[in-house]
Amino acid sequence: MRAKKVLSIVLAAGMTMGLTAGMATTAHAEFSTKELQVNIWDNNQLAGLQQIADEWSETSGVKVTINVVDWDNYWTLLEAGASGGQMPDVFWMHSNTAQMYMENDLLLNLDDYIANDDAIDLANYYEGIVDLYNSDGVQYALPKDHDTIALLYNKAIFDKYGVDYPTDDWTWEDVRDAAAKITEAGAADGIYGSALNVSNNQDGWYNVVYDYGAQVITDDHKGTTIGSEEGKAAMEMVRQILEVSAPQTTVAETGTDSLFNSGLVGMITQGSWMINTFYKAENSADYAWVMLPYADVNGNGACDEGERYSAYNGLGWAAAANTADPDAAYSLISYFCSEAAQIEQAELGVTMAGMKGVSEAFANAFEGMDVSAFTRAEEEGDLFFRPYTRNTTVWEDALQQEAFLAAWQDPTNPDLMAQGCDTAQQIIDNAIAAE
Image (cartoon, rainbow, N blue to C red; front, side, top):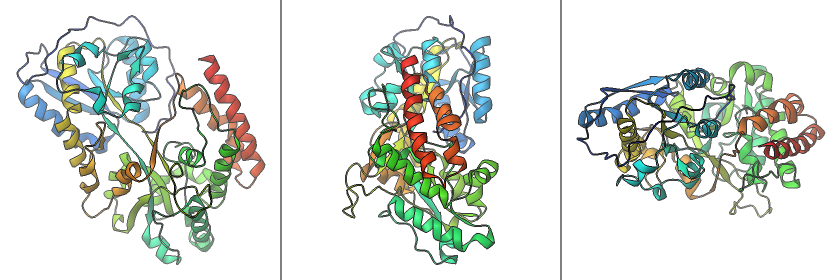
């Protein structure tokens, strides 16, 4: 899930504590605490997760209070807790910040718990998410979920301006052309064909980069190919789409989701974690999802392997190293990540599972809205794990504020985008070298 805020303080070290080995996660285990505090940042997931947590409480005797804290304040409060020693017992971890917390011994070491837990086999979860929350061979979080990206469009806008609906067979050129038609026809109405928030890279331009054969971060996490010819071709397509879409000034003021729900934008790309925002919207009957477009790199008119990618990411359930009852904290995490709860999470429409092969029910969780594009993304396309390194935010912020800023502000100039790719290559290479 997308991230915008850098971990701004040096996390305090020295907060480790002994791990109670051999913890049994049975329903009748004895715990020393009567309540666990859990922090998350997505209110859309609260009801479903609280339902699952309450099931655990019924057998454990431990109350679970889930607190929803907005994204920016979530990390501010967690940082403050890390420094002051009052972190929540259990909380979400994200790819942008996990390494800092793991390296400073702020998260509970789960290794012995996992070794003695028949409900958890790490081989059953998405490898990229497992690896993300492992540092120096120690597992600090269990995969909560995974997500994919799809294209959302407003049928009413396409009907109004006589443009054919997007399909699973669309290329990025089709997106550009449809956006151009709607933006031109809708100028008097203040309607744009598409909107792309360039700061939301996971659900936006990252996918185009991989479709064209480049990588923001290489598989070994030691470099990038964004400055390659493939990378420049991808970013040129991004530029062409931006040129016929809502200006970044408008996007920055209002946001792509609000623009779409206000009927001012014909299509956007968005992640599966945001489905509820549109499912519950006033005009949701006009909304439809299709798979992300592809890049017809070989020009054969068909989507071949490696031409349609979707980024995927996954949150991790972690516990504070100094939680008052590590046994109870792990038991709750284990329950959230058990097969039964992972299936229930999908059935309730909370998110797709972190466990492989149990997310089918998610596609049927939203009555009247077909969201199968998200599950088909991994069946009919290819996935890449959201790019990260040890200090992701260092280079990620620099791409926004330095490399591509001029191109975002003036998408009419192809040279600015090409120069941005060269600068991005240098920024990422230098940042990784400094890690």
